[in-house]
Length: 259
Length: 266
Image (cartoon, rainbow over all chains, first blue to last red; front, side):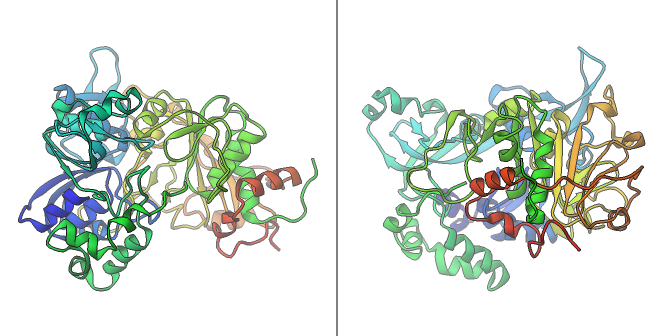
């Protein structure tokens, strides 16, 4: 999220965002940075609906490519593997294929069925937050799930990683630590240490997501709008942001959620 | 087994929904929401101990977790890793049964979790998105839970956005048969239904105590197949209620159906 906040502070715009979406998508939409969103869901987890994504959709402000969440994984894999598409039956019979003219249904050379050809989702850049990384881009996701971070890294021309801790390479000499490295350093373009950089989302097992902050964020959609939220929290730098949300110690003290 | 005389509608629905998982064998049960999750947990602890469940985050469990905050000494019964990407390996293999709560369910059993009204480019109400419904619906059995049975959910016409494949011949993919699609139980606050009527028509299976077939039809915008004497949904047993209470120590089930009505309505 620290990297997303840098985009919010920048003059970047007209972005096509590919995301298992949360507040990253909502904030970028609300700030007018987004041309198109490729998504299967956009949610704040314990708050099911993302308010600023909804506003953007309901006002017709953004283009969308709405797909199944497994299709997104296939699209990332196709990009990573250098193939134009991966066949799947996912999406057949639904509006995924009728509302996305760019997703083609094809015949198989091996049977008489039709299949969805999920196109490669080739990314210019992936933005990832890791627990730990070394200077050459060995990145560790120590939480119970690394989600699709490995495939985002592989699908992109460039991958930029913020990390909670920058460690010496020797840290990974311990096989138990190396086991939690899910992509090769050749996939990482650059690493920047930003402790607490996942806030307000979680970086399990270090810290959970900030429930009161998310409530303030969703509340701003009803009163004040995104500018009021940015005025109060965003700041000119990540240092300012962290001061505005209570400081790094407070971030790192946020307990992990129970599901 | 002692039949309970005092139970809530939520508890009746949990027991009714747990039947969806009873004969499934060794599949991953995914119940999204409190009542479906408790239904799967109850089945795993009674009728189908072979069922598999996750902790809703990243581990597969050999014992379901109670819902909500657990004591410091609680040790969950992990048996394997089941992170987000691995879920699809399981889903697409078909070894899964999901129970979910869509916003719309049309006469074909197609559902909508995405966009309501307006145009697709600018819908009146944007919801979650298609999520995993397209993949679930074509890969494995699915059941639905609807906490408020009305004609907005069981609506007229076709879903505004079709997130999951149903029994619509117009949308049937080449080389597929309608019998490949497997929608199991629909449990609502009024009744239990399935798509076992003629030509995969929705069919009334049982009525919750105090509910009439007319009420079900009035609250469903398309014709429900109603044939013969419709049985009353089975009351929970005391043993089932005890397991539900153990799986839901903070009584979150009391907040799932408006006003938490009793199971037997007068």
